[in-house]
Image: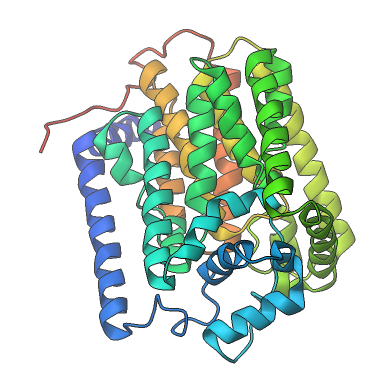
Length: 408
C-alpha cells in the first residue's frame, strides 16, 4: 500500500514538475515582487534615495566609488572618515554601515558609480549586476524559464531592495564555472575578478588543482595578481594594508558581538545568533569548511559529470564561508542551476524533485537558519548524486527528466 501511494504521489509530482507549470509559478512570484517594489516606491518615493533608507547597503557601494575618485582613496578604509561621509549623505541617525571592508579591487566596480547621482547609480548598479547574474544562469541552462526562476528566491528580492553586490558575486562565479571547460583562460579571468569577495573563492584553487586544470588555474592566478597590482597603482598601495587592518577589526567585532552576526547565514552566524559561544561556533564552522573542502577535492579529482562538480563548488562556497549574508544566497541559484542541468541530462533520482522544490520554497523565507538549512540540503543532494550515479543516465523507471509540457 505504501509503495502504491509513493508511486501515486510521484506521478502527481511529475505532472506538476513541468516547464510550463514551474514557469507559471515563477512568473507569478516575479509579478508579485514587481507589485511589492512598485507599491513601496509609490508609498515612499524616497525608498531608494539616500535620505529615504539610512541603512541601505548601496550607500557604502556608492560612497566607495565617490571616495575612490578623491585624492586620497585610502580614506575608504578609515571608519571615522567613511562614517562622516555617510552621515553627510543621509543624515542621522547613524547605523552599522560606517565601515568598508572589501578588497581594493572592488573599487574598479564601484568607481564609475561615483560619477552618477545616487539614484541613477542605484538603478545602473542593479541593472548591470542583474544582467550579469541572469547571463550566468542562462549560460548554464539556456531556457527562458530558468532565467525567470532565477528571479524568484527571496535573496534576489532583498538584494534589489538593499542594492548589494550578490548579483555580481553570483554572476562572476556562474560564468567562471560555465566557461571553465570550454574557455579556461576566460574562466580564470572571471575567478580573478571574484577575488573582490575572497571568502567565496577559496574552494576554486582546490578544485582546479584536484582536476589538474592548469590553464584555468594559471589564468586565475595571473588575473588575481593583475587586478591586485592595478588596484595598488590606481588607488594607492596604502589601500592594501588599510584593507587588512579593516578585516582584523571586522573579525574582532563578529567574534565579540553576537548581534552583528545575527544576519549571517553561515554555520558560524546561525550558531552565534542562537547564543552559542564564539569558540564553539568558529570550531564548528572550520569543521564544516574542512569537510566541504575535502569533498570538493574528491569530486574534482574524479571523472564525474562536470555539472555535478560545479554544483558542489558553488553550494560549497557559500557553506564554507563564515561571512555570508542572506543576499549572498543568490549563489545557491548557480548551484541549483548546475544540479538541475545534471538532472536534465541524466535524470532525477527518486524524491529529488520534491526536495529541490522544498528548497525553492524554503528560499522564499528570508530567515538565516532556513537559508543555512537549504544550503546544507543542496550540498547533500549533490553528494547523494555523486554516490548514486556514474556517467550512465538514470532509467525512466527510477526518475524521469523535467518534462517541458505544452508551451505557453
